[in-house]
Image (cartoon, rainbow, N blue to C red):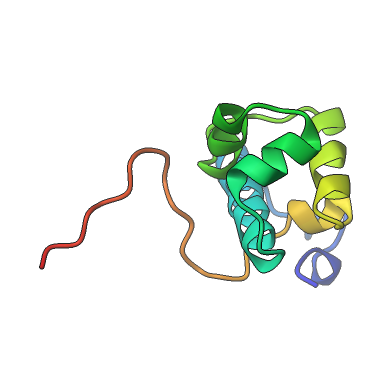
Length: 103
């Protein structure tokens, strides 16, 4: 696991960019939702949140509270720690509309 390989305190701890971690969480939520075969609508309903809010989370545009992070983790059958790890795929999308492919 990524976080287990890093020291938790002391001189070896490197700073994290909070905005990057927020994007990681969004990417991990989207990744896990897809693995479970869920649509955004289905997950939003399960969590009791709006689809728009879930879209903002997945886009890395929503700074979550700890309560929200734990609720998401529970809804995705993950530990909260798993959500804040670097996503498995190396591409973390930036907020905004996806680019269309040229034919």
